[in-house]
Image 1: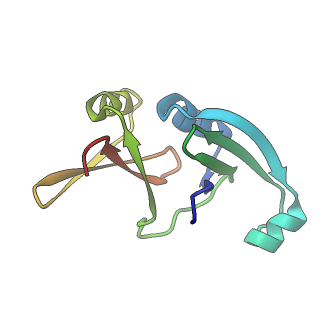
Image 2 (image 1 turned 60 degrees about the horizontal axis):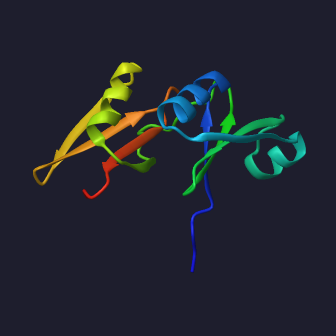
Length: 130
């Protein structure tokens, strides 16, 4: 059996990572570490040290690679789907933090997406709904 250990994505800066993943999504800041330049190049072809913040809850950890100036691919299709307990309350929190809510519709059902402060895309689902 396979399980998901963590997700690794990039953020343009530490402040935005904390604001989104800790304050909006509610993940705890678990720890921080640095990937040395040699390993960073061997794995990612990046020629400098990489600072990483690890956020998480009891279900999943998210490794946020702090990478100033990174650019997302176009089109921006890769996304992470999260499930929230109460969609209405979550969307209020998102609006309060000036995060755009992207709403689409398929087969008569609304689909909700948001982006973090670096543009990473998140699909939002509510518990008990598809």
